[in-house]
Amino acid sequence: MLWFVIILWLIQITGALFGLELVRFGVYPREILGLRGIMFAPLIHGSFAHIFSNTLPLLVLGTAMLLGYPRSSKIVFPVIYFGVGLMVWFFGRESFHVGASGINFGLLTFVFVIGALRWDKKAIALSCLVFFMYGSMIWGIFPTEPGISFESHFFGAAIGFLCAIIFRNVDSKPPEKRYDWEGETEETDDFFESEQ
Image: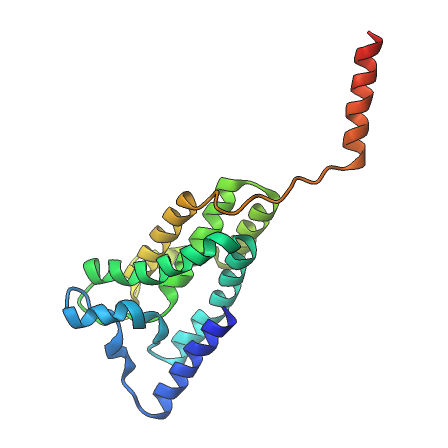
């Protein structure tokens, strides 16, 4: 995730230094040329404030997913990356949609929901962590400001939710830790049963 974020910043800095209008490479719904945004839109941001607001969540949520679900993340990240752009192309407003916030919403929803479904200690801990840090982001799936692509947020969250359901059993659960006193209890129970 660190390399991904570095690439985002390099693109943003290069665009600013050379006065490149990279927003035109974003997703533009239902236009053939707008299809290229499915590949490029998450790499492009409208301003430094925009990329800054996406940087820390990408690092935290991406690391949480990679740490907790290393096998499924190899599938889930590309599905969220390309799926958001595709759905925005079909259903978004007629405007250029750029930025990695759709990915953030997908990662947030995936890590939270899969934790609730798997219910092992590691999954619950990661789920609680991302919820307490970024749970308030979920309001971004609703229209707020005209310049914000709530469609990217909504479809990111929806794809993350579906991925959590589909890939919940791809990564094996960590082994349950057994404590010394648990074995002693079982031995004591066996002793009393044999005495009777």
